Amino acid sequence: MRGAAPRRGKALADLGIIRDGALLIRDGRIAAVDARGRIESLRETRNARKLDLGGRVVLPGFVDSHTHLVFPASRAAEYEQRIGGASYEEIARAGGGIHNSAHRLRGASSGDLKRRALAHLAQFATHGTTTLEAKSGYGLTWESERKILLVLRELEREQPLDIVRTFLGAHLVPREYCNRKGKTPDAYVELICREWLPQVAKENLAEFCDVFCDRGAFTVVQARTILTAARARGLGLRLHAEQLARTGAAQLAVEMHAASADHLEKISTRDIRALAQSNVTCTLLPGCCFHLGLAHYGPARKLIDAGAIVALATDFNPGTSPTLSVPMILSFACAQMRMTPAEAISAATINAAYSLKRHDRIGSLEVGKFADLAAFDVDDYREIPYYFGVNHCVLTMKRGQIVYAREGPGRT
Ligand code: NIG
Ligand code: FE
Image 1 (cartoon, rainbow, N blue to C red):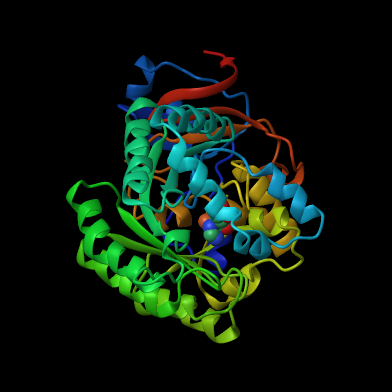
Image 2 (tube, protein in one colour):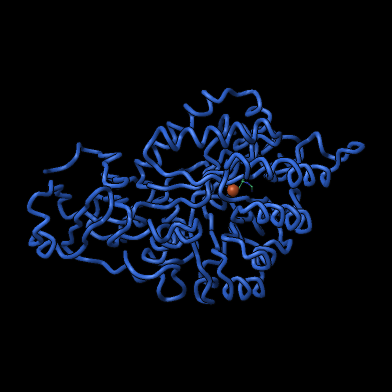
């Protein structure tokens, strides 16, 4: 994986495969990458420690650009209710869904949240992910939103994967603000803009701001207000857009020059055209469609063919996509959205890195970038999505350090 970012159209399928390749790593960065014979003949290689991956497929570590990493508990009971016929939105209206998670998170200690997230981070590494974005959004009070962002900041220091923090105070209007006198959804929006966002910026709690702009969550007008305030505080912008209904959120992402518009299952042909002409990354989250049992997936083919920047992510969260496996997301993308394996891999590495404004450092295996990589025990990269539901990742490296190895560090 090498070449320019972001990838649009045909360039998305261009992996730049090197057969029998090798990498030279110095101080956590890639110093050279080429055919093995050439790397072995470099003078600097003579003193290097050799890690033989035995002809396995090596990719840049996955960049998971949309996760809700910190949550208090699973929602397996709601899963069963949905199987019984209740819809995601019905459960949310009855006080379940995000309200359920927020209620439990407010009562959870930072220590408990951290322990749970640490276990999940170890599993991310096991599946080849080396950088992930993580949102707040299960607090919906200042104290608990801040608690999540501080947990994320501590996690970033205490374990090897990179975590990019996003403030999602506008995940849902908390129940306290549902049209009681003086406490309206607009009052909550104002609270976020006037009090929370300045504090997020002041304490450097997050790099991005996200809004769930959809039916039953925030309107386009409210989302515009929040994103405008976030931009004024120097935050990058992301949007949950057009998942449950077409509301105009994708056009808002274009208008606001957001870094990413995510979900997009319900976008129109006009939206596709507008996104394709913009620099907004279209982050598709097929894990949601699978887990919610929906027949309709995001229009990956149309977006790619129109020239949009397409990325893939897990959306790891307890309500709609409880998976942290990017390989599983690749399988969904290929089988359900007709992305080729090569397109799916680019979407989950270099384009995802672009959406996080980190494509200068991660997302491909090129000289000067971090030595973030994952090795898979397959003969052909296409077998990663093909043999679905199985984790083929045998080794994950972050900045030159092995952070996961299935069978010890390999043959040295
Ligand atoms: O990306 N859509 C909003 N947020 C999550 C779901 C959160 C939840 O149900 O807990 C998503 O799908
Ligand atoms: Fe999400």
